[in-house]
Image (cartoon, rainbow, N blue to C red):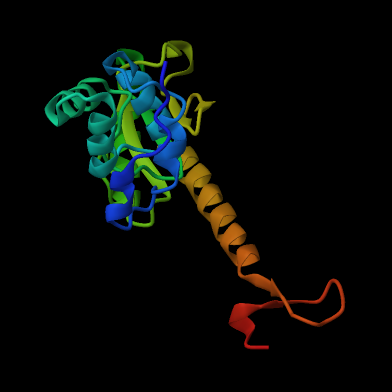
Length: 195
């Protein structure tokens, strides 16, 4: 049982996840039957499976890259594109469809300027559809970040999305507040005020 502790190929280029993969790979023995758990861990750490990471997984497991890409594209749990910070899932099951999920999806698509399966340019939202959540009594159902919202309509969804966006903007503003070096404790300045 030999653990792979270093992959020298990481030194070849500036990859944003350069430090993450060796740490993940250290948990596995590099056997082909480790493929799915490795892909799951890489995606958990990075949010998706970049092409370069898939090539490194192929190298680690000794599998042909085509096999690694085949597994990553076969299972719906894996993503090959970055996702948004917030995942919006709209149910397309029969009960939800009859009660207006199509209108809700159309409104979200127009509002965010993305189609199902896409992520907004600011990477704040990813829009997905789901065949059925199994919450038909609450139709139409929209799930945002694993929070189930039942008996939805377009205006309720717009309100939730606006609240999320406002909260994110508030977070970004508080992130831009910096401490003034050398000043008393508790004195802060906002970058955009020019103070």
